[in-house]
Image (cartoon, rainbow, N blue to C red):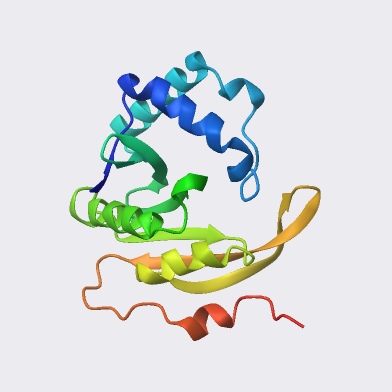
Length: 190
């Protein structure tokens, strides 16, 4: 059964192994972490920082596990209170676990926590339009594409567009995102 839980210092070795195993795979989609992140001491520091962020209501990081194996991560960061009660969602699933629906399940669990435990009203996510799979994960979890920024991210020596998504957690029964909303914001193929 897939579950999410905050990282603890007892997860440091397994988390380091997960990050090292998936480093090249993740760097296809996100900016690379500094090389010195990939050490036991740096991972322990990162877990300590995640715990502080959680205690101070700044960010909530979770490990995604299948039984006892780390298969990914899902995070709610940039928590903004009061007035907005919002956060930004990020997630990643390891290469050998991709394509099995784990990202959608992990995002659903994070959104349940965002609504019930964290009392967030709005969660945003940002995706490059080339990452169709990630946009589908958001769509399955009732996110709606609401904007596009051209040449907004410098990545691998090129400028890339970004698609912005939102999910309002305080609107029960709100309709889920639909394909045409996303299609209107993705690049047309020739």
